[in-house]
Length: 425
Image (tube, rainbow, N blue to C red):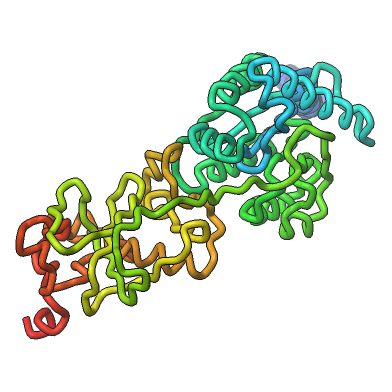
């Protein structure tokens, strides 16, 4: 061994030792990093798996909740029966029995609905509740039934009480006076019940009225026709409803099969000695405030609660009607057709409350309306109606003698000015 080797040996061995230690530390660090990377990959995979499981649990939870909601709804199914009292008039055999007849009619209706549901293709769910609502104008129906000698006023009122108390879910809704008041409520309730998810069936007692056609068509377009059954009262369904081909049900002897006469005849108070008047003039005025003139006798026509119409001597420039035999004269009720409150004297009113008027009656009603002052114009205000049926000026114009003595009902500004004078102004 040379002197150089002996001198370098001590210096190289410590260096090799350091290098070895460095290499060992580097390898150890590399192993640690690899372990960290591997562990991180494992954690990411585990996290992804947990996220999948959480999503599955959330979906299962939502499904279970939906199933629970559906089960709850199916456990409380609802059957609604909506009756339009204008067409679904119970048979005389029930009405004449009063309170007991109302209970029997409710039982017959419930049994008929249940029998239909049990024999239909889609079985009735268990626990179904039948909710029945009868919409009608009580005072109007009282008048119709009494005038047609079906039952007495006391019998009808007792019948309504019996029907409404026969079951907690049976009710009678008095819609008040007014044209088509029952129709408006029927349409809204029909849409609400049919669209409820827990409603199993809706028995619709309005098959007599074509006015329900658009509403039923809308529900059929929405795919809800399977929920609707037309409860037939008259022998024939209304044409537009029959064309929809909805399921129908008729319970024998429950309702009157034909429409009742709603046009009672009345007698005029003939005071005019002239048997053939040619141009009798209608004008609006209060009979109580009129002063009778000597030598002139007048015929009086009471027009419900709006105004009373006076038939007086001929005058130019006014509408006219000719008198006919009292058994054939059927003037329409102005308040029923044009007043927003309807006829307040429906029970005692002697005039026509039918919604089906012929051409002659339509013209008579227009004449009566024009001879009744518009309350807005009469008070000096602007009429808010785009198409006002009432008179904005007196039919007699400047020739109105009653205006000169202060008894004419047309008291608004310029309501007695002739058209020519108004144009000049």
